[in-house]
Each structure stands twice: as structure tokens, then as C-alpha cells.
Image (cartoon, rainbow over all chains, first blue to last red; front, side, top):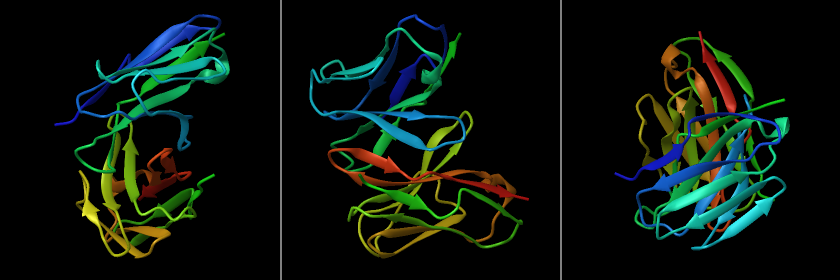
Length: 112
Length: 111
């Protein structure tokens, strides 16, 4: 069974601090996606990582992918309140066509 | 940008009603998906479709059906709504490079 695990599930951090969210997956995949969800809203695409070693950055968020370790990280630099949201990673398995498998999500709260 | 449009943001329906949730995408994608999202349970796949008139069951298809008569439109049908189908419903369309694009979601309450 394909599994996508995120940790931590809940994260409370102070403004200005750095932290990393981890996403481990159990299938062979060279594509990993990060999404953000605000309360009561839908999921919004953040990053698409398409190959081993890929690194993408947008503002205070940076995502990376290590396909050999089956690990992706989402690093938060100098957190601000606006980053409070739930973050999901997802992989699409080469074995199951186009279906995506989502992690459980990490609920991030940035405290002033 | 791909747009995925869900017809309703909020719906309140009575137990036993037949409910239609509509989803339209504008990028000519073959694959479309319906998920439901509940607190503590994450996203669960209900049905997906990889072509017109084609459908596949996801992880929790019971109590639901779908219709894909046109490529751009994928409808989720609750044959007889029940209170345990109160949830946030998310439609998505997929492109290989950009992954899923989600609609804005429909929050359905069954009373």
C-alpha cells in the first residue's frame, strides 16, 4: 500500500523562526507536489518538484526533493503570520497512473 | 492558468434528497477527480474519470455516483443524501506537469 507521511502533523512556531516540514513516501515516484490550504478554502498549488535534487523557492518557503531517499522537505524561513495554513504534500505513483496520494497535512500556526 | 470551477460553495440539503455537485475545467484535461475532506481523515478519493463516459471507483465510492458526459464536466451525485455525507467536497483536474488543480470546494451540509 502506498503511503505518504508528513511530520509534524501540527506545528506552532513563533514569527521569525525557521522550521522544516518533512514528507516521506513509499512508492517509486519522481514527482512531488506541495499544496497550501487555508481554513475553509480549497487547496492551492505551491510547488511542483519534477526530478531528484529539485529545489524550488517562493518567498519564505523552499521545497526540495530527494527521490532516492523518497523524501521531500518544505523549509520555512523567518516565519510570518500569513504562512499559517495547512500544508499537504502529494505524489503520483508511476504504478497507478494519474492518481495522486496525499499526505495527512501539517497544520502550521505562526504566533506573533 | 487551469481553472476548475465548482458550481456551489455552500449547500444545505435534506436527508434523502438527490444532490448534484458540478465541476467544470477549462484546460481539456482527461483526468478529473472527486475528493471529500473531513477533519482528521485528510483527503479521500471518491471517484475519478480518465475520459468521457469512463469512471473508476476511488477509496470511498459508497453512496455516490458520477457522470462524465462531456470532457470538461464531471458531476458527483449523492443518490440519497445522508447526514454522514456532510463534508467538504473537492473537485480536481490534473495536468502531468502542474499536478492537480483544485476547485474552490463545496461545503455540503445534510440535515
